[in-house]
Length: 262
Image 1 (cartoon, rainbow, N blue to C red):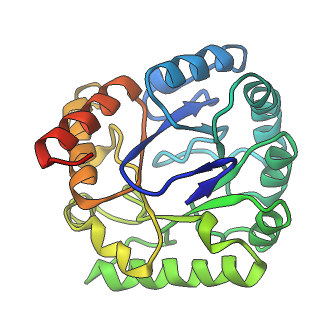
Image 2 (cartoon, one colour):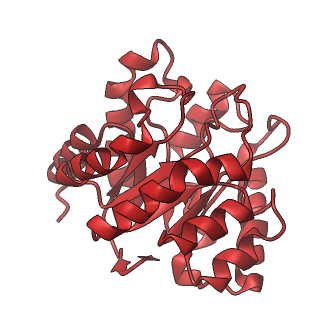
């Protein structure tokens, strides 16, 4: 997969979460705009290969902010990070107005939690900038029955939207949407068989970091997150989106050693 100037061909790579929000579900992940450069530098030093900036929480029960508010939060951090660091930069938004602003400031990828279905202009904006996209599964209601046909059908439809708009197929990755429109058992089922989504022919991104499928308090979910990262290595998942960069980078190294991978 191509993101910015970097091509990812194999292995599992860490995407670091930088939340420019006051209400993200784990308070330790929240970064003030003035501290974004320091947070980016630390993530890179710890081994992150992609940064993902979010300016709107999508935790359960979140209160939506406008595209204009998103832009006011991320515009300067995106601009300054791209000036300072040579690293692919993703912006997490489902508004095409925000996507356009992020790409104008130098972002390389849009991470859309509604898989290009919330805003009818999103795919066209991404294509216009020749940018990359992460397409995530989501739904208005919780899934029922066999979840995999429903997830793959949604993702295939979103891929079709992307291709029809002119997005390069080498700049698309897919996210099964753990924590979105699924209950805890469904999330665990999806995680256990996440590689089934590879049937669509695109690289996969896994986002489980400190999420509620692991139960307990958010501060106690690092260990199960690391186990899911090791599972990603075993199953050939290309990206893991995480809060704790250093620990997840180490988990990937340990899993490679355990499974005899280069």
